[in-house]
Amino acid sequence: MNRDFLEFERPILELETKISELRDLAATKGMDVVRELESLEKQADRLREEIYSNLSAWQRVQLARHPRRPYTLDYLRLVCDEFTELHGDRLFGDDRAIVGGMALLCGRQVMVIGHQKGRDTKENLLRNFGMPHPEGYRKALRLMQMAGKFGRPIVTFIDTPGAYPGVDAEKRGQFEAIARNLREMVRIPVPIVVVIIGEGGSGGALAMAVGDRVLMLENSIYSVISPEGCAAILWGDRAQAPRAAEALRLTARDLAQQHLIDRVVDEPKGGAHRDPEAMAVILRQVLADELASLDPVPAAARLEVRFQKYLAMGVFSDTEAVA
Image (cartoon, rainbow, N blue to C red; front, side, top):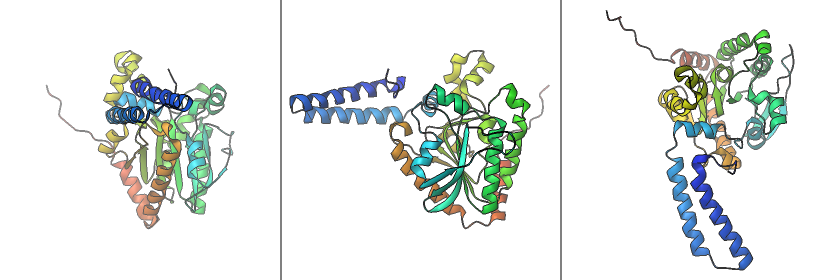
């Protein structure tokens, strides 16, 4: 199957293939197929609306992981007018699973930081499949503290299955690096806007997702554990991942209803991977609006709201044990 399409998109692929073949036939044979094309295109539009308006949680997981989905560097190229990448954590090395640097966004200077996956095997090995080591999180924190020093707003792009769980990462203090980021992001004085563009996996995502505004693209996901990991723990069967995805409430709409994120950003019909340029236009305007809305708020008030926002997350009930 065409890797640009997922299994549940097969009916759309079949219709679009027919449309393409009919256009080729008209071009080569000079046939009049206008009415047939109009009919097929209307069918395709109706089918897209029906499929993409009723996606399951697992189907959104598949879209969030789509190999053609735009990554951080794609958005920086399309959204920012300028970008200068900065490297290294000044302690160990440069983790290529996280990219960041100074950028120009709608005429204003900002610090942008994000997870970066690879498109092929070679690049995925270089980027460690978007799973940062502790030096990656320390690089991110160094850049955020630099932004705080020079009064530059921060925009983070979240797209990771999670922090790298290997022995070397643990030896270099993975848990400490994540915990330090959580603590320090609460008190960085400049505005912070977070955008979950694909996968938001566990503490590896949260370590760069503490902000004044947290946005999610329509087909992104955000969860404490992957559906496969959850299924393996609860049912001893990773094949139960679709069931786990529903139970985890990990979609953008679910999280907005639970007040764990602030805004859902609509994607072009079919997902960001179908039209990255259109997605970038939408995201550029959304980021400009969010940053502008934070400008008038005094730093002290903004920090207090940020702190209280995360303090209020989570709901529990206290009940007495029944004998």
